[in-house]
Length: 431
Image (cartoon, rainbow, N blue to C red):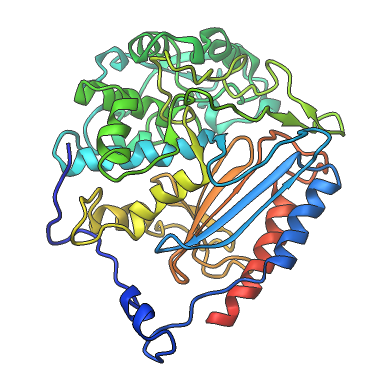
């Protein structure tokens, strides 16, 4: 279902039209193209691979028109002999899937198919009687920490209506097998989510599990966006894979962006540094679902809207460009300026020097962040990320496939900071 452009949709404006560049490259009316010095950026990425902290790192930065202004790959040739990376290499992107599902939901809201204030049970009546896991004092497990030793838990009725907007902003109570409470994590592990046949089977399984907070009670990152994807399937009668195809990839000619692995393509193994050195991760070590991960098979009929997509760096950047720069007057559009504004707005919360969850899949860095100011980010479980710098009209990605690093600093923190610091220093020349 393609929607045509209308007033109010996000239009791209060019400070320096392409035809002007062709006719008069030296014209002072044109802004100078942004140019990055790749050498120090390359050295940072190379260092973290050469030192055995990452098995590989691939980074790509494009401007709003799609011109590649930076690209580099660093590969540990002992771990990945003969491996070459480029913008068309496929990666597991995990939670970067969430923004896609939320964007689809916003598109359906614009079409009047759903409303953010709709009760979830309107589309998934199986969730009408969900129970909340609390401790003996009646406190939700989401508000406790594992040291509180809240197993066994008590089940109580929800004290508020579960709405679609709770699925957007992770206040619904659906959780990953990472809470630290064995009695609740084991339920997700035993459910074996990635091996359910389809969304209907997953709905029936989740309906039997408790949630770990009352709807709207607190932010708790978890399976909420996967449930949102299930709701979109119910609301439209289409599976999530078809919704992505019909509303995003086909009408906007985006490749490298789907739920199943293309024929003749392969995925890079996941690595871990949890033992102090890099090795391939063994089965069960990516334990977000407890035991297993999606298999991305062509015959798969289960599409996990919070974790299940594959993408190339070029494909995900093209999707980001669709949101921010590619809604031109002669092109089919995806989301309105109003919807994009709502998704990227700074939340009304206490000042934070690092940044904020927007409540719509993005992390917005603060305007006082010393490394990157007012940058919109998304990231995934195996060190995948994509960001948008609206000030400089850039879209960047930085990908690996590792769930724990050997430096014990925290996945990507030091490397990301070093890379951001150098990039910001170079971009400051254009401010």
